[in-house]
Image: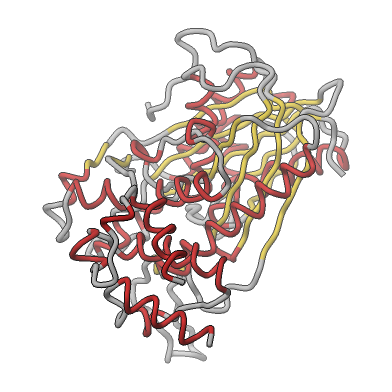
Length: 337
Length: 75
C-alpha cells in the first residue's frame, strides 16, 4: 500500500563533459547522421571526475532544495542504480553520508532502466509502512564505464547522469496506480556481467573485462510491447481522468516514436530529452522529469504517466498528479559542480 | 498480405502507395535499417501472428519476398 504522497522536489546532476556524436566518429566507424537517424541522440554527458555516488549526492541536495525541506525530514533514501561504486555499502548509504542525514532507512534498488519507477513505488510503500514524512529517491548511473567503446552498435547509446525526487506526505494521494513487472530474460537480451575474482578454491574463472551486451531487435520488441502494455493499463485505471502527458524511459527515440504511432498518441504528449543525454538507464526518467519541470513543459495540475522498461526484464509505470508550482528562476543546476 | 505490408510501409516511412512495388528493396530503395525492419515486423506480427526469426529475415530483401514468406507461413 502506498502512503498518500506527492512529488515535492525534483532535480538532476549530469557530468560536465559533453561528448558529441562527432567525437565518437574518431573512436568507432559511425557518423553523426547515422546515430541521430537510428536513435535521436546528438550528445551525451560522460563522467570524468564525477562518480555515480557523487552525482547521486548532488542530485539529492538539489532535490531537497527544490522541495524546500531540510535533510532532517528525510526518513527514507532509495538509490536506484546498476553502476554503483561499491558492492557495499550501498549508494543510498553514500548519499546519506553526503547529505549528513543522521538516521533514516537507506537501501539500493536494482531494476535496470526501470529502477526509478521501482524506487518511487518502494519509497511510497515504505513511507506508509514506516510512517515516514519524506523520502528521497535517486537514480544515478555511469554506464560509460561498462560500455564497449569499440562496439559502434552499443557505445553510442549510453551516457551518465543522475536524477532525484523528493516524496512528501500530502492531504490527497498524488501518486496513483503503481505497476511493477518482471519477466525472465530467457535470451539474455541485456546483460552486464560482473568480473569474477579468483579464490584459492576456484581458479578457473573468467576475469576478462566485461561490457554491456544487448540484442537490439529483442530489446526493441520488448521495449515497445512493455511500454504499450503499461500505458494501456494506466489508461484504463485512470478512467475518466486520463493522463495527458507521458515521461517514458529514454532508450531510443525510435521506441518512443513507434509507441506514439501504434497507440495513436500525439508525439507532443511525450517528453523527450534523449538528444542531449542518451540512455542513462535508471536516471533517464528523473532527469527527464527535472527538465520537463524546469522547462515549463510540466505544469501544476498536469496528470503525467511515467513508464519504463529495462534489463531483468523489468517494466513499470505510475501516474503522478503534478503539484509543484511554476519553477522559480535560477533554481537547480543540472551540471555537476 | 501485400496490402498489410504496403499499409505498414506507408505509415512507417511516409511512402506513397505508388512507390511500393513487389520488387522494391527494403534497404536499397527505402533506406531501411535494422530498426526500421524491426518496427515493420512488429506491426506485421500483430496483424498476422507470424514471428520472423532473425535467420529468415536476412533472406527477405524485397516486398515480394516478404509477401511470399508470410503467405507461406499462413498457408
